[in-house]
Image (cartoon, rainbow, N blue to C red; front, side):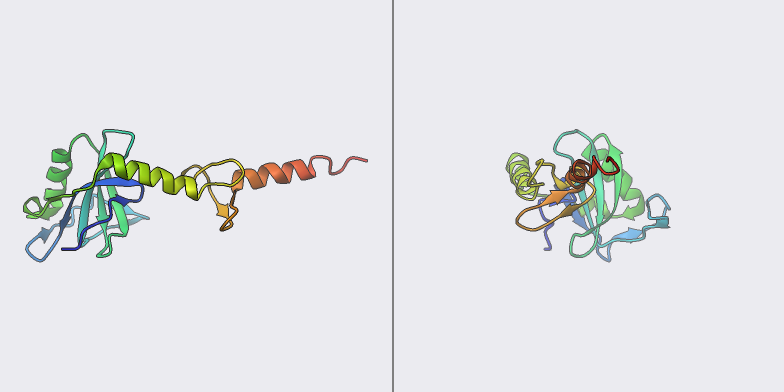
Length: 156
């Protein structure tokens, strides 16, 4: 079985399902991504942000790359029921993960910190762009340094 990673697009994976040939897909035009309706996907994951009690369904490729997300569910059951309307038969396919949310949160936060801006500490979630490998600088720091360097331009 092709298990998902513990975190997909910054969200903790609680349960997952493979939409195999026994699952009947009904295009309900409910998930629009980039102006186009997302069709059948091979993998689904019920996820949760680390800091809220909202639940989401990640629609993923065979390799668990996120293709679209349905959000705003108040419970895992609500997320499953909604998904069943488009993926008839998926209810029997859900699998619990064995991932520990606290361990994965710590690992994810450490990963974010290790790739944060070397100057201000902002993570990739807080910025628009980041440049550099060993020493990284974010768009905020670039703008700040640019302003400081050019603050006296035009003065005589």
